[in-house]
Length: 254
Image (cartoon, rainbow, N blue to C red; front, top):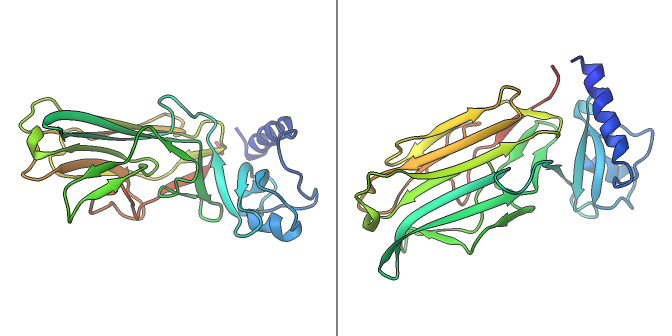
């Protein structure tokens, strides 16, 4: 598919959703939401058309948030809910004297995107919902509380009281960029302790990724295995509450 043809398809899709989109100046070719806010101080939060590198042949649909004070770009995930665009943290630990398996699943509706560098800030959970109350890993003074998982991260944790076990504790996460105009262009990496089965499966068109982390046989304290984005470097410590890594994208041109 040529660049021109792809741009035409995106433009058609954007036009089809114009009723739900916000109005922007016809002669403006904005690269960022700030460009729109500067051109129209009355612009509201909502869906707008932005252009990669300010190039008319590279349009994409952005959700502009906080337009009155600090405009930010978000990518609306077409596939959301169920097993799409989720990050899982699974913990096996004693609760009231009984070893219990707990799953914290975070669903993402939109993700924060840097339109200049085409990266996703996996720590931004503005448009994410958790399936349950926060999970606490470890014990004081070194405990970590996780309310929502970062985007594109899978984590599997075993407390010492849950060991030994011969059945891996599996966490599955998903990234799906179908219909957004972008594809995945970066790598994932694994880390942590007792990591026995980390796996990443990327679709042929690079729009989707399944992420799996498995742990087995806990150490004396709670130990976790993880799978996380590797750019610009692989996390060296537990990435569940916060991570320095990001997801790298590319504009979807064949």
